View 1: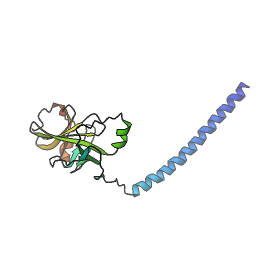
View 2: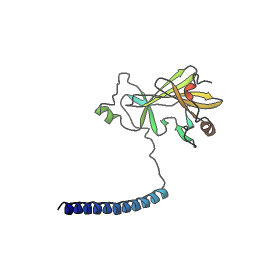
View 3: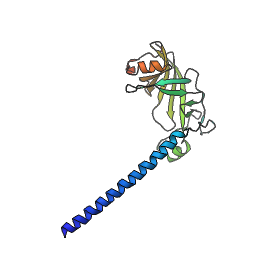
Length: 194
């Protein structure tokens, strides 16, 4: 009796496994065709909505020193990636400045998460030690990313730092410079103006 139950269970398992493998084959063949079609069609990303309003914020204008196409990489990359900053966007995220000094947002608030949802970034601008600083973060994020204007070994760049201002990397105007210095330890940079 035990042997009969064991045989029935193993038969059921084998049948289930063989059905799954044929389902997987069907799925992979259908996904192959959708991959082929997606290669043929041009992928378009929606344009950022510059008209969207958020309570307590206004559309910000990024200073020209930060605008343009920059190139970023990391120690493992062999190609530089574009990083685009325009008059009102960082990559595809629209930038806003806080207008209500009493506004405090919380990432734990359901209301704030609904009201401030979207591809938007809060920014502020400072002049420090001869460099311009652009502080950016999502409305409900807790850590800023700071873009600091500067030069590195004669190449125009934006140093990247976290809220504390400690530099951890750089993006360059020149693609070749980004690749050349991809393994450099930018935490050693203390004066971004040089």
